[in-house]
Image (cartoon, rainbow, N blue to C red):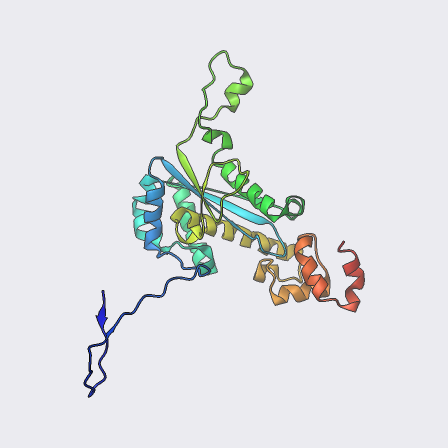
Length: 287
């Protein structure tokens, strides 16, 4: 709707001026989190046609050290329409915009929900060795597959699967999984070659309640793991920066050298740009 422009006091306009103020559109590069109250509504739309919705997210892809961790959270329509999701779901958001205390409080809430049978959650990780072998994308998919596999195997999502009868072999009967009525939604882009059918949403952890819950589970799980590594490998500050490339971490690597939990491929650029003569022997072993 057009608005009449503000008239300068004391000035008699020759013609009436009309000023149209157009809202500034969002930049395609700008991360604009969805309002928290809409996260539950997003999932209620996604769960149409199935009985459960599984959100999955990962943490640690860009870190210099430590594993990449993924988590999966299964919710049902009953949960999404239930008391907790309605009354407390607005506390859930993308883990990156919550502080550590908020994430730990929600973790405790999630544990209660699991104990009550209202949700299911699981996590999986890919080690530094697997990151080196598969590259970070392959390792991320492995961690996601492990997290999902703890809830349902890929075979449970087959489009058609006949139940074995009495004449089927023992292996066929024991390996059978009925087809599940579930939809998998993932934060980010679609995963090529992933064994689970899924739908991907860019900024999904700021749009979907169950993906946001998964992001919190993955973050808390990885943070706790990095605190444990800090006790095994002192001097790097893993408990503080969780393996990410902070200035403190960079200085520690150049001063102390790397440990087995560092990702070689992620350190090469750092070591190539900051050559210290006292570190030449250390650098020579990087290859």
